[in-house]
Length: 556
Image 1 (spheres, rainbow, N blue to C red):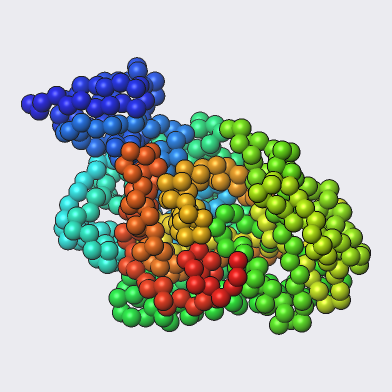
Image 2: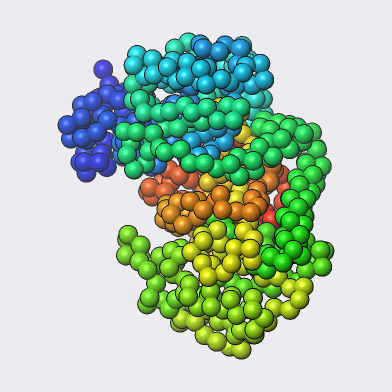
């Protein structure tokens, strides 16, 4: 018998004596009435852990249930393993690829050897429901990487095998479920019976897996049509195949074999070509009498600023002269700024802008009149007029960057034919392996952590703490309008996470263990550990990545 161990339970605010060697599942079972919910994972000393974690020494433990962001990731990962097990049983010849997030879920394909019919998708869903009904354990295991590789090879997991061979970990944590094994870079739930809310919906040549709705965890979320986002992802996935780098393991091999410069050059060329196409489309509409205002929108750290500057250069090659207007200069006086749920100024609200004045100025500019533009004094919290005047001449076009560019209410008084909308987002298409995608939000968060530290003096802790509020603003003010775009520009770069690795890791390691934000820092560090680093010196000065890392030839 092990000696008693004292843990501090964050949920109840009390110290609890437990038997040394107890798992979190066992501890939670003894505290069921006090907790009031069934945990799916936990934070132990502010690190995300599975409920299989064993306690031998004093620890701080916060049990996490459905609704917490870390618990949601755990839930989705568990659904993915259930999906994998169901596919191996229903369609053993299939090769499951969980590709990327879209339409409130995750787009999946079954490979070229299987026709993904609605009947097959329903059979897979039925098998997943059976797994939930059987309430089987997700068995957490740990073994020498060399010992588990043959098992993954036997299961046909070529990308996972390559990843594990190239990341260099001596031991690998993996899970067993009903006779199959898989690995993930985060914890799974204790049992399949906890994952009863999900949906599989046929889509294109595959299907979409969804978990539970944030607003109502008892049902899956509503389907959201995102045809333009799907096309943007699909184009880049096709490019990845041509470049021979669809997974992090393949990227690591490219780095180790000294082929990094070629990959960087072709990836940067893809960006340039995409912007040239958008520029050509804008120019054609301009010459047909429309597209006098180009609105460039996107979520935080999507690279809107560099995209705007590079698009302006492309327009100049088409003999159009770009003129820039900053939406920030149309903020209302600070005292009139809307407040968020916490009572803080909500600068991400559409109504933090003086929409009436903005539309009035735009109308006058488009009618050929000269307008004095405001300049927002952020120190004083009000707009000032300092003689900055603008008249649009023939051959000139307005470029306006801001998060609300796709929202029709921003430019409600401007005729539709006068507007061209560009949506910018880092739609990450490289995957860790076939069952572990790279979340677009993680890519953007890492960009922001580095940028905020370099240019604003903020720590990773401060950026991570602010991120949930940023995400809520995006969900409310940006993502609902994605499909309004005339063009979608994917600002992600195949190689960028390998470059950011060496910049982000010291910042993430500086987040103290005493802070709850350490859980997110620890998760991101684990994620980055899979990448072999790429030297920033190889990145051209015009690269969008320079907006975050420094050394850009553009002025910001």
